[in-house]
Length: 199
Image 1: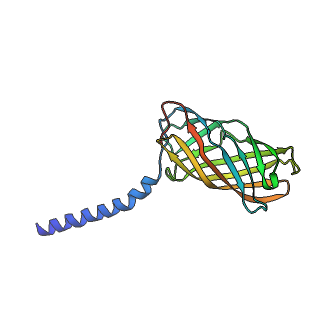
Image 2 (image 1 turned 135 degrees about the vertical axis):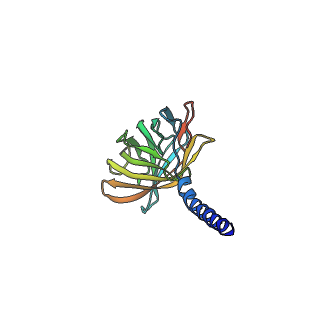
Image 3 (image 1 turned 90 degrees about the vertical axis):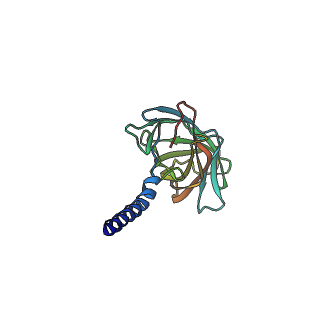
């Protein structure tokens, strides 16, 4: 009987150890919900694109971000499809000082909000942005910003996604060989459609 108890304790310890290993990896992924719902996502905050490695410091900012239509996948998925959007009007600083900028978000519906890494590192996949300039001395472009925007933090309470120096994007075109671009927006997307999004 003592041998049986020892075996049971060893087995229980082994199961507990395996569970402790498995739980963190399972906990990192998150699925969007409610399944098979369509949402209107606005961007009420300003959004800034900072171009790294350029002197003087160069960026462009928009008073508000994009407006997306989005669909939560079925079956349940960590990917949410962004299916349509709008063009932004922005202004530049640094080498883009004095420029008015038309910012077109291309390639939809290939963009998606990716919760695979959990709520503290939401990514926007397949980003493809075309920027054209007017009213300034800089080359009018077009410039292309592309890549996977990483580092987003999703809030179920506020139903919004924030980026603080989000990474993973590159700008090319008109003499720019490829500089990294970071993105900051306190509400890059915000859900305004009930039943509200969760991740």
